Image 1 (cartoon, helix red, strand yellow):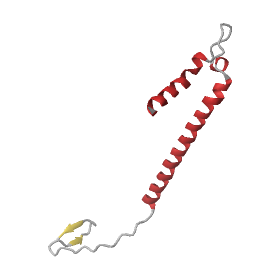
Image 2 (cartoon, rainbow, N blue to C red):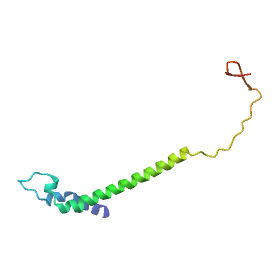
Image 3 (tube, one colour):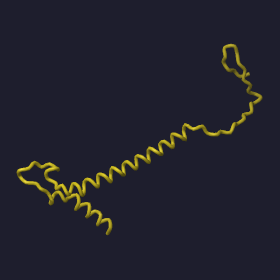
Image 4 (cartoon, rainbow, N blue to C red):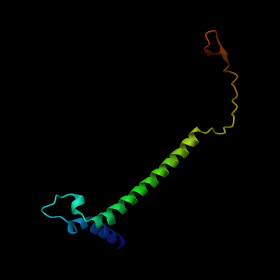
Length: 103
């Protein structure tokens, strides 16, 4: 029932300019000339404001999360040092031409 009521309300609000307008044969069919000013103030302005505020809030949340992730990427972490034992069969020696070779 609530879903159908919501759809009915949206339908009535969306189609109101069709049956509640100031159109005549003498005027051009433009939104500012045809649609009632009360409809613009009561419907368009609040809906636009609500959508604009919602978009700003969502983008602010995305931006703060991006900053948090960037901070995690660029802050040094505390790594424990790991000691690696050298194999006795695999010794590295330097040669004259500064290349590493195995003995």
